[in-house]
Length: 85
Image 1 (cartoon, rainbow, N blue to C red):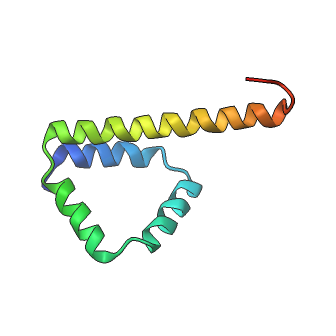
Image 2 (tube, one colour):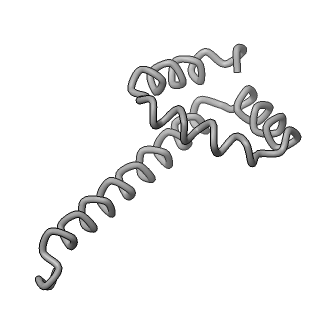
């Protein structure tokens, strides 16, 4: 990762917005990741081309948007359980 400045910039930007719960969730997920998987992921990220990094960022942003929209939809349904959406 250190050899890829774009990846370092992206990681630094992402970490600025993390909350304590985000860190706890990340730590929980890491408990179940095998060491060899972590090495493989690290190698892929270190060797990623700029367009691959951009694609990773787009996928991550799309996933976050999807999860936020789903959470908002569930919240609305909980507030108005008898309304049809």
